[in-house]
Image (cartoon, rainbow, N blue to C red; front, side, top):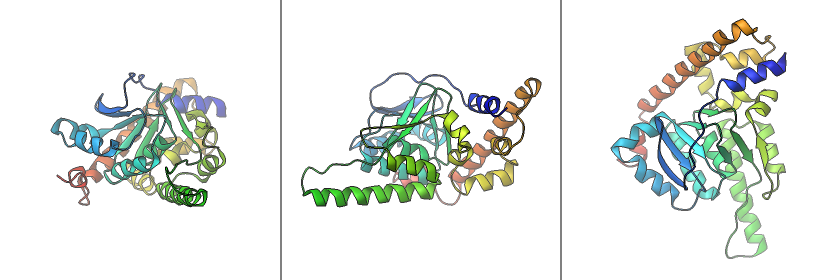
Length: 258
């Protein structure tokens, strides 16, 4: 019964494959796509892209991610932009979001990962060009604490943080939608702390969390209606997210200095 429910849950978020492209930020579907290795200077490049009138609305609607990671310090800068602009993040079918990219994904107010997409984490690794071993160790520890505290504040489950810290920088702990469902973490990672409560107050109980609390999976004849219910709830929650982008004095324009 639980296996059937998990299969149905992760199928709800399926979408088309992302195209192959060089590391860049570009228009994709109704949103934007950040794809490739995260490098120093990417934050400034993203700001420049979003400032263009044709791209501002795309960034507000959805940020798609497809990256194996990269510079963690630069990723934190980009993550703060996503966090403060009430972004929605999405790793689509065929894409991956590993290492520093996972920080970007968790910075979304609403976060989606499709069936056929993968997330991945490992221990933070940064390297100084100069300095003693002790200095490098202290710097790495400082960055690691900063990242963990930031991700904890976003609502990253303790199990994922433990997996991250226990996995060597040369290795990768892969997180699939099925694993999240099996660990009953799908809802926990899909919404920012506090946002899920506000969304349920407006949209009603979150259907996935309700189902994972022991409710039997729907019969074949009920599955289509249940999936429709989930999609309706997601639409309602995204409307709430969009309203927050326009309220509280928090606007993307202000964040990028326009």
